[in-house]
Image 1 (cartoon, rainbow, N blue to C red):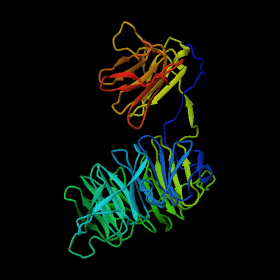
Image 2: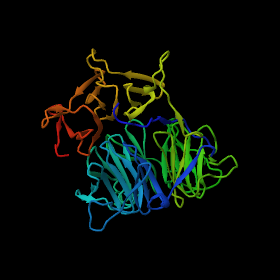
Image 3: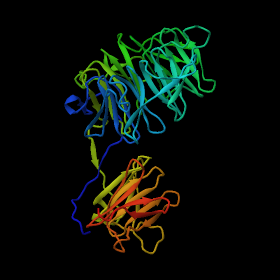
Image 4: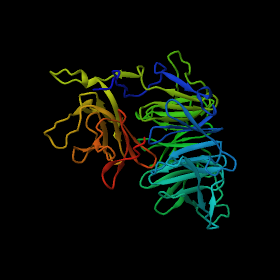
Length: 488
């Protein structure tokens, strides 16, 4: 290969889960790292892998290196609605919904802009902006549900920015004025709703009606329905387990009273409990009492006892939002990385592990591009590899063994740029590659050495040729790459 390149080794996060000890590394992110405020109330990971943090002073997006901070700007309707953020969730259109002190809005990543959301009042039958205090925004199936302080439950159907207010059952004059603090998906199209001073309700998505289920407990802050089907309820002093089959609450799972703000279940079925004053607690559903998350010396590795949010990301990492200590991150392993080496029985080829590029697909597996040994597809669960090499006599083979860049599109097609032979696209349905030439109609020649692929916000795919090469864009109507500007 003509270009000089340092040998790259591919290091990947180990799969697994954390236990109750700080032999698993705990690190922090605070204002010194660029976080807008150390009071972190809510956490969310979007479909692109970015981490979002709601604080008392703005919304933060974290890419693993830097923070982008979003705040309200007076007079700018495309800015964040409120700087005090209480809840974040994403919908099926990849929009981010934000609820806070002065209402709710959504963030459209394609425009990098915020938009207001509205609801149809049950009585007035007209669209009103959501400006009430919002405790929770929750994506359930194709719907987005919002729990407010005075306007009750608001339900938004797929793609809509205008929701519907759901009144309480009965003819009470205050049936539209109630306080929803918790929302959680149930079974068979039902949704659990907690209404302050009234109790546990069920929302039927088919009939769009609320019904009272249990009023034994009339104050709660959060819900979590576990993988076993049990509903865990956090209140100002306790954590209860509600059993739907008998309609009864258990006694508290806390050793001492503590305000419970959030409950989360991890990939191993452990419940993580965020409390204001009691710190971070962990509960095995088979145990009778939650235990404080401590290190081997019996001390909490979390830098604040006021914990407000817990989120497990796609790699098993726990992100802990605290009221004064910013974000604490519990790594899932003692060793954060290991080396992965590709080997073939009876064969040795140094180029097999000379990595130029890689890309994670929607299943979490990796496409790996090498400098002379073709393309590899690594199944992380089975630790097995599928190899694709240039075979001139075989139709549908990858066009080159030098893979400079890889991009996985929304249609599950994998695009690879190559040295010597343009661009190839892998179709998972046919298991074959299609080759694309980058023809420069100004010089009358193909530009075969392609170094980079990039898709912009408008979903245009770009390819950059190197060695004084040009810039090309993919035209899906013509199914070809076209020269963008020969002056570039």
